[in-house]
Image 1 (tube, rainbow, N blue to C red):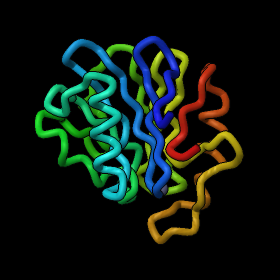
Image 2: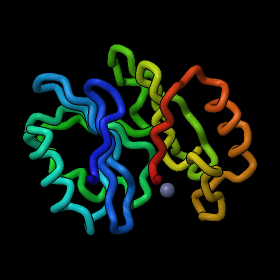
Image 3: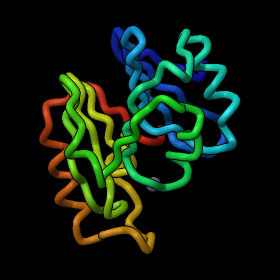
Length: 162
Ligand SMILES: [Zn+2]
């Protein structure tokens, strides 16, 4: 059962092998993915999308929480997707989707609030917060970023790893 249904059109795909969760917002042909996990999980990701009846060609938006390899290695599977990450997130215009800059785990970390679901990347987990000992981390910012997320009115936490 590697796919959880979080809401009517929102799914969480998780994997046994190392790699981030992939979140899917399914809406007709304009599907949205949040992160794409690692190369170890390519086939399983494709299998799970097929079960959800989503053709990779019908994914049009990729939202990237940060550029650690275990979150982005399958980006290439989605040739028709526009990829949004911290550097171009200001160009994102998407109803109900609010990007939030949360430096700490990495300088480029983002979270996304969609309706009452918080996609927190590697900043906030169910138990604990993200590591800040990478060279691309900004440890002095993590607490401020975590506090920002904790105060959002979310009901469902959807972190990068479960
Ligand atoms: Zn990370």
